[in-house]
Image 1 (cartoon, rainbow, N blue to C red):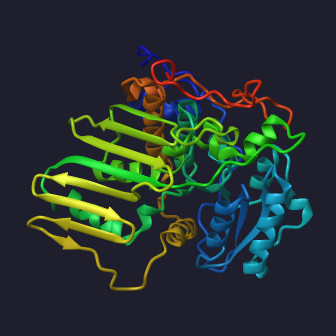
Image 2 (image 1 turned 180 degrees about the horizontal axis):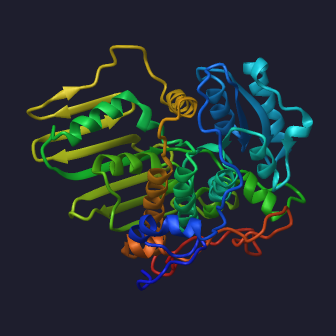
Image 3 (image 1 turned 180 degrees about the vertical axis):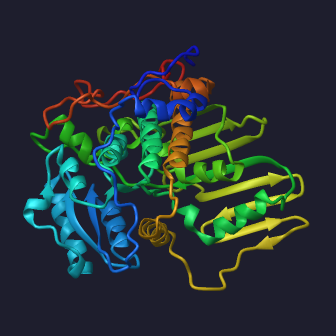
Length: 445
């Protein structure tokens, strides 16, 4: 569904090919897009004694963990603002962070924001913002942080649909122009075992890579039931994992880690895909609309394939891993075990201090902020997210879909406005069940 050659529209949510994006993003920004300058960041915290002020947007478990890791980086840091539309989440997170980092947490009531535009107020107070709400909101929040000239750490995935990915790519270009540092929570990029293994792979340790496999087969959290009198928006946000517009489905929200590793190994994103999926055990109202299994065959430009599998069904074969078959050996990555077979056989051994990649990704980002080092993870985060979205489009529709068709999709899953009374685009039927994609019938591009 590629557009004919023309000047792309200024709206970063409008269809935009990967090729035209890099060529035209600067012109779109200079032409007065919605990402225009509000503030130019200080960029450098050369004095190691200078305190970096942090705002947390999204105060669930992952956001709380990310804030704790940000506060554990070398050099002085302080959490000064928090935002979450669920006040109970903010209160719980604040108590947890205060218990662990009391001297670094200063978030009085006037800097606790629980309305839908609270993220704007929290961002305005900080040097860096941690974006950790449910992923559907990520493009909106990232755009605003870049508009305000703030450094960013955002959790994966960075969007749940193609218009959101295009917004993130446009904001990523503006972030580079403003010298903003952007980290994305794909922590394997900061894990020594992956770094060394992928370097060896790309240096030819297994010859020519012929095919790739990746898995996230395991279990997951259960859904939550509706509370009496709860509005539809409140229920879906509280049960966010089970709604595609909020989570992206688990092929995007969780399996993106493994997909990202294969894209990293390959140094590219796929050009087309096809696959299958469905719901075998998720049949309750609280299970919303997402699938419980996906299998996708992704094809890269040179014809090599990635075979991607994710399943969230109890008591089945488990694996969270990535594998490469080469002409002269194989690569296997699983947990903290990394190995290469063949003439250049090798096994990773941690001979020094064990590195926590979740902490290391924050250490690296804050070091880049303090010493003005290039740090731009948003683009590969967006492209890996889009790869997962492409896979979901294929499993939902049952069709083969090209990258160009997927990235240019006009299907926007998010409501146009947000309030507790706003109706999401997906609603239950009279019996309380939500519509679920049907391969062969569902249209995704």
